Amino acid sequence: MAGKEKVLICGDVNGKYKTLFARVESINKKNGPFSYLLCVGNFFGNSIKDWEPYANGSVEVPVPTYILGPNSEKHVSFYAKADRGQVAPSVVYLGKRGVLNTISGMRIAYLSGVEGDKNEYSFTKEDVVQVRDSCIKGQPSYRGVDFLLTSPWPSDICNLDEKAVKNPPAGSSLLSWLAVQIKPRYHICGLEGIYYERHPYKNLDSGHGIHLTRFVALAAVGNADKQKYMLALSVMPIDCFEPYQVERIISKTISKYKLRLSKFTDKCWFCLASPEVEKHLVISIGTEVYLALAKGGLVPDHLLILSAAHHQSTSSVPSTVCEEIKQFKSALKKYFKSKRKAVVFFERNYKTSHLQIQVVPVPIGKTEILKAEFEAGAEMENFNLDELPEQTDLSQIAPPGTPYFYLELPSGEKLFHRVRKNFPLQFGRDVLANEMILNMEERADWRECKLTKEEEIEICQKFRKDYQPFDFTL
Image 1: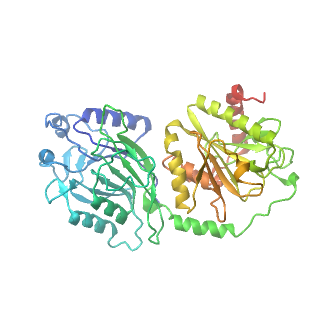
Image 2: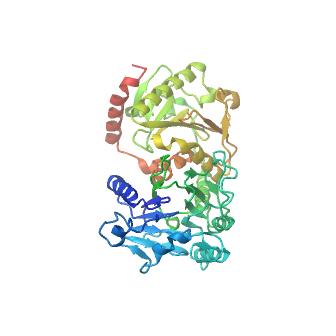
Image 3: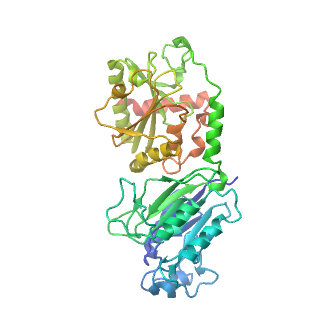
């Protein structure tokens, strides 16, 4: 099975080759190596002279680069001398339309030009159908492609998205049809000089697994508004992981074997006075609440806020416990801010015996997409996350005994789901582990992340020392 592949993607270059490749070289040195760079929109500018040093090889391109074809007549001449697609050393014109299959197993569908009459810089319905056929024909278990690269936007892509751009372009109805047919995991486009990442949408189930499509429009390289023009992704090819449908079947099978929870608190793993508690994981102890390192944490500083005495959930604790939980959350927000991180809190009161609030730090740069990713994950599992008013207390909407999933985001937004049945137990971890946030899907299951006791002690000691200035219990 192939592993993840690091990929760079950029919007319209518009002849700013020096700016682009300097940025690519910098990213590649810091976070690479990247396998290749994919470019959408207008790659060339107005002057052939600016391109000549790259075309003749006197200036080296830092990573293999793939570009789409022209979107207007003025750029057609730049492609005239392409030798088997190569317009310069390490720069390849993908072609009018087709599917690129990489060595790692990545499948990249592409369509050059804009919708219009048949010519060198336009595509027609015939072209779109041929891309569809190239993807699907001969594949009875077809699940989708990894990328769809186009220059124009698809039509109606902003529908039903609360954060849609104002006055979006009309887009191409043919591209909308194509995206529905071939189910790309990522649909990337440019041409409009706008950065816009749509709320991920779920594809129709064809019986071979459901996945989400993430639509991203990239701005132009070196734009004056400093809008995002480049993506750096680490992606596992779609054909290299199990479909969600299979994962759900496995989850349901496992859930038949119910875990018998002890009625006695002296057998509880999380009651502080219990002999079962792993005290070497404890970081800070308050009056009613304590902080501990999560066993099998998603990241090294994945923590748990727990009640010292036996309580089922936050919705059922006395006010004194609730207030101390808020103190811990406040202290942790300040601590992680000092580390240039934001923090997500979530609680699953379903198939648990003791109050556990998961504390997971994430990069500050990911905070804007958290809500959309959690909502998309919920949509994938066929349930809704409802946003709660700012002053709403859990006890108001979830009386004691109510099963629920509750989430607090760095933005202050609070999301809630009243669990009915068959709730995915690893939902919070699954979303945070995905490639758009922490990009560590292999760590979604805590059992795959277990450390030795010595390693846990070492992490706890370091965290206690770093956290001490923020610890209100001292």
